[in-house]
Length: 398
Image (tube, rainbow, N blue to C red):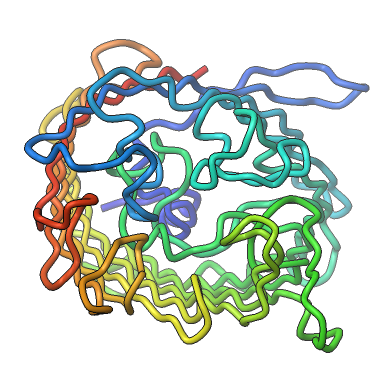
């Protein structure tokens, strides 16, 4: 099976589910070639069987398809992107700006909306998702350095639902940071090895966020990022072209990241490992991901999640995507209530039919089942261990 290097790189960092790239339209801005692209993301979600869920509940594993969107129609988000990508020159330079409009924009904290997130009930439905400048340093094969606000470097799934195999996000997605304000360097060692490393203000949180916790040394107040991508060569036989990715983000979360206005003093660490596997059948793609987070929502807290992915192309217009996942964490993890302080243990199965009947329009029908395997329950009355939703997701790309 032939897989381009670009697709492998995207799959390694979480975009394996993309069926089509966003269209890009050339513009002329200040004498430089700039592209404009984006999408409009909408949904309709119906929750089956449990009427006890309060609005806004659901925790981190229901980041974009929680109770506030159930039993009705939703505008999720509108994204506009302006980009001048790097060219082949040794001293190439460029930039990228991603702007978000709509309810899902509140997932990203920025100084423009008070650093709020939708979980906190704060925000004005606008966010700067990314805004950075990038330059190539002509050393070795070329070191690409970006500075500003950029997406986190770990994770199998991404914010953009159309670039994921499923509409809803996985348990692991909720254990990862979202974005960073800092600097990131990437180096392509060879066709088989790529590296990245960076430094940021905080583990996550609002743009330009600063720590307010006292008693920390200068080094402890920074966040460190690192990742490696390995691509198996042609000599690997049936697995040739498969990608293996590993990354870590370590730093203090910053003020207001978990609780508005409250400084966070614990050092939060996220570890990630993922793979996309080539198969002898061109229509079949497989993947797997593992996330582990320490001190993510409180001191001495922990949580981890593992997921397996399969995608099968039935025809040019129809693709079936499946995700099975298991997660476990200490009391209070994944935003769930607990009985007697027990650990949370979750099982999830998601099946998505991805069909493209119209040019530029991605249409998906999805069923998702979550089950609590121990003391935690869904909802305020703590009576139901099962959660079942059906969703229709329509995204137009331009």
